[in-house]
Image 1: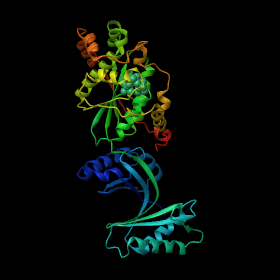
Image 2: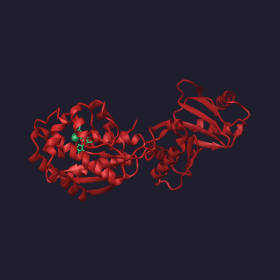
Image 3: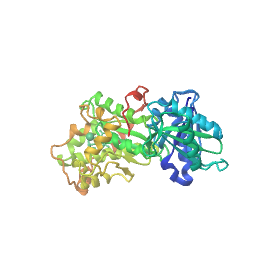
Image 4: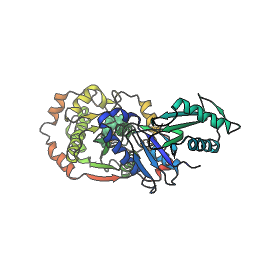
Length: 400
Ligand code: ATP
Ligand code: MG
């Protein structure tokens, strides 16, 4: 007996009251997009769940794909049958006897169809009894069954499901607007991007590079990270910023201890300008409080002062080992540790001020006419659209 549906449960979305429709519509769109290589399937969006009608497509491959879609709490394969006690009994029996490596089972019924002649407790007993009476070597285990046979008695039909697996949770990408991720080639910012996407945000990325001090391969590394991110949402546009001339000027003109602070402030200003142009309402960074000189409270204050855009910092309170754990889980770590130089490390002073004073930074910047440098940079940004490649499907690690 072949499963003909996958049922997708929304989890967190059920809490969203009137906004729910926006989320479920976005989720259905993302599911269709992610499953475009399975042309026969149909996506049915209901208020409290979604069904994928398989029409002969491979359920395991589809569930694997769906595990990277935010907004899905859990999924199961399902068999749709008519609301008839005998039909349900026979179908469940077939599913049980055909399942591999199963010795113990449990029946759990949910009845939303009030017309159905038995309530859920009665039906558990009827179906459990039928399964036991018609098999020889199965027993019931209500605590740790090898197979849970869930029967969902709904108005329109009955769905028998088994094999529940957890999804990526979070909110569907696109349901919480867009943000611009400052993406370095390091470990932190890709994780920050992932976590922001998990809250339903569609990302664009901005990367500052300084050729010839930073190589083409350093840039490729960033595009590879963006590609990994794109797998959790749609394509990611990466704005690649030519930063060399401005960095050289900062290096030349700004007292050593303050050059890093000024460089960061320039990154923020340029990022804000790009965000504004693209109609994006916030920035995202991989900063984590106290990690390095640029991430002390004083530094953040001085750097943040150039923008009044919200700056989302998902990692702000996390330890490095927690960040690395996520980086590995989402398959970014191996890319992040490739040994290519970053524009910040190339120009970083030996002893950056860990407690820069805002008034001093502003004094140093006055009369430097950075506006013209920034404008030149904005006129020369290269935008690359990065799409997820199919081959990634295979090497994607377990998300959970
Ligand atoms: P990461 O691991 O993300 O590189 P980090 O621990 O090295 O972070 P910093 O070098 O202080 O920390 O960078 C802080 C944040 O500034 C980064 O997380 C990233 O969001 C942004 N950033 C740093 N360098 C770049 C760059 N070359 N292009 C774009 N954003 C950058
Ligand atoms: Mg870095």
